[in-house]
Image (cartoon, rainbow, N blue to C red; front, side, top):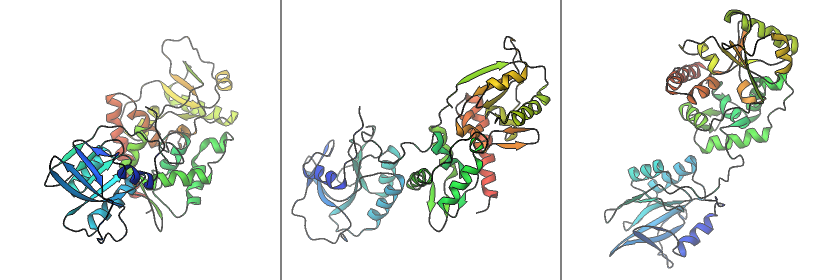
Length: 367
């Protein structure tokens, strides 16, 4: 089904007026001659919900978007607004998830959406209907800020959780972007940072008040993991070189300096930096250009037991916030977590150790 553009609040109210909105088996009727009641001029419509011979009156708060922040603000209003005894509060938004419906039910507030989901909370009758998909395209300026380069805005909060300004966030992102410093990539723009921050704010992951502060690191990691995509790989080679695991790192670091070529361990090969997990003999690394590096390594690609995997990619996220520890550059803890979460059961179990590592470090960071 093709997603449609989200209608305005006025258009949504008109749908109610034309009786286009229903929640089977309940039907709704717009009250045209609205009685004079104190709605503080903040609610948008009065309707009747009917089932068989039973009728319930609702005062409706309508919102054209249903982000977590807008949802919470509307719910707080409906819980606090003063209504006559014969009217009950109702939220009307484009889409309600099952979790939001459950929260409405617990709060004693009814809700309906444009997809056919809803909950009616009342002594006369009760309805809970979910499962209809969201038919409306996102109005967000960036479709998904939790993947690709825009995810660096989200990831930087897992390195430092508090910032004074948007400009400071942009500066920190660019400082931690290895390919910006060593591979002539363009700096992230201020507009991209601002748009991503707006989504993080609407998702209640980041708070923007006197400072810009990470609120829910757990939820942020969940969002990043759910939307993670493997980097675009241009070339991938496995070879065996006549080096021990202890000396391969030093060899690669030397070549990286001489060739001015970024080389970073993959997240899965960096696990030992953050969690207890035995690393195999094979070391996997990211590099934006393999040809010149392969000429220097004198490795055999025909060997059945490779000890080095070279992955050619210019995806900035896999290099983002990488750290040099002693004799090598290792992926960030976030990249390691995301790669493991995309793996098998054992990988996902190890990812939980890295999650604990990330959250513990955040608690130690300046607030």
